[in-house]
Length: 463
Ligand code: NDP
Image (tube, rainbow, N blue to C red; front, side):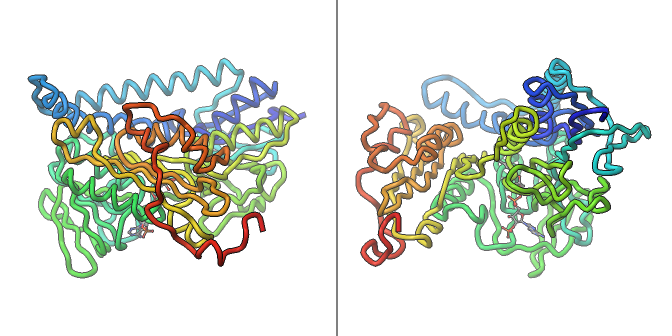
């Protein structure tokens, strides 16, 4: 007899969901160990505080819009410490909500680091040991900072929510989600931001036209983006930090934020000793049911480095609980996952980029670029981009990319249609909601261009 049916290491999005469903719907006896604050990266040092900072940073634009609409509004100064205090109490509230949800489901919580002793035994820092029929590794990831001289002078996203004061100038290293989002947040809060990227354009991997649109909006709003800038070293220069590039470039700033990717948290868990296979990145290797090479051990979320997004981790955790305790073997679905980059302008995306579609077969590209009614009224330069990537043969919408205000909200809804396999004609016969920005998604009549091989030379649909 095991002490628990299920023991979860890690109280983030994936672990909490798996534990709760296993206990509340599967009737399992569940233990969960978390070494830090309950909620994990998303709630404590990721999506949630980040989004609240996005809201804070968008207020100057809201005030400018209010002025344009006749309000005698004016922007005061930003009180970082007041905001930070409110942010902290909101996180405390959310953390408590996570704890009480788990407790109400009957999950036993251990505020402790944990590691594996064998395929069915977990040890806590106190020395306590528990046996479990199934063990879940849901330990997430952590920011990665390359090993350059002076790396200790930089901060990572973990620190951004606790800064004692906002800097006047910041250099942000990286061109992915986190770097680009923080570049916009700090810029909106009045910090002079330089984002430096080692490659030719930030947001690599996303649709080229969409990322160019994001970049144009970011630069218009005041973010300086330096491409081809690889950092050689950081040095202290009085109260400031000097960022020196491999090409001899140098920048002085008050704060350096490194957002150069994340690494899975697998060290110290005792996985290798048990024969749990890891990928070269250190991530836990799992099958479609999130099972590792040791049958009683499972892993979900960022520690598996599949798609590193909270809703994906939640789905993986839920699917695992259904598989193990509801008699319903369930694979998490990793196909057509929508996401949003909370830059300013915001970017929502699902499916194939134009470039990916062109490499795959003939495609039609529909594009609408327009100034939204709301900001055009005040003479603001904001411009939306809406883009559909359509399979020229099956007519299926393969990709949808939206850049502009509320793009994250819009892509969530468009994602349902794309996931259902909607064709361009399905979009066309959907009557527009007027006047909205998103109506452009159903009113794009002619393709801007055809890409990929000519339809006649490509294999017939379904071949
Ligand atoms: P990303 O993988 O998105 O981006 C990492 C960036 O750092 C890339 O631009 C990469 O450049 C650059 N980089 C990597 N190594 C180095 C190096 N040694 N020197 C200089 N630059 C380097 O990672 P993030 O940290 O931004 O985000 C991690 C993950 O978190 C994301 O993949 C995403 O899944 C998730 N996330 C999602 C969010 C959302 O949904 N809105 C928000 C935040 C995070 P290159 O392009 O050349 O490889």
